[in-house]
Amino acid sequence: MNRKKYRALASRWWKREIRPLLILALIMFSIRSSLADWNVVPSGSMQPTILVGDRVLVNKLAYDLKVPFTTWHIAEWSKPQRGDIVVFFSPKDGTRLVKRVIGLPGDTIELRKGQLIINDQPVDYTTLEPAVSRQLPDPERAHGLFATEQLPAHPHAVMAISGAPAMRTFGPVPVSADHYFMMGDNRDNSFDSRYFGAVDRRQIVGRTSSVVLSLDKSNYWLPRWSRTCSSLDSNAK
Image (tube, rainbow, N blue to C red; front, top):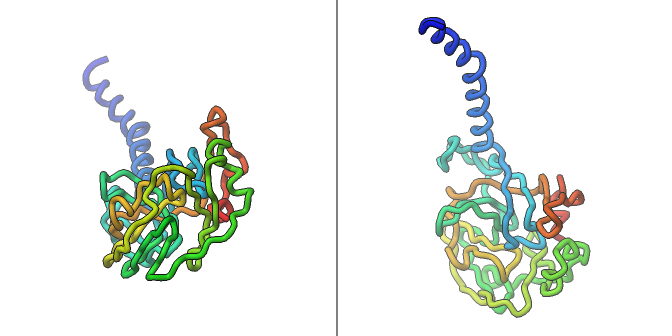
């Protein structure tokens, strides 16, 4: 095959095969970057609401529209609300984390012996439905202390770990403008705003409210069908 025929063949291959695939890939990655994505949860910091092995759907249009592959905001139409579960970049090292919004701009947040206090008002705690904690592996459930935290407008499940060293007293600290105080529902096993401070609004990727797929690490990574395509609200109370 002479050089001219080789170039013609390569050109046809590029136009018919490679270029369409590259365009499709660019579109798909742009959608994941700006519209919707999923996030694998590798740790237990949001238990019992989110379990290790859950894949949660991230709605990146919940609050704003960003330039693909950046944190630059093109437009904003909503703000994170107290109780939202959000994905954001950690101020500590840029890792993507999943936590719950506890404090809004202007709030004062305090934790006193595990008791959450917002703007000098203690948050109430009630009994958690046993079905929620039963989703956890037996060893974790055996050492867990569970309750429903009556967060204003958004009650949700929380847990503590009996005997574990943890930051159960914190603050009070004010939340500055355009920042949000994040905490994990597993209060004794969560690296959150108690350690790295409130999160800048620009670092919030999106909101999550459902599980796309759940794989059970303790059972050969088999699917947890009861959690697949389930609402996080239904898993939390």
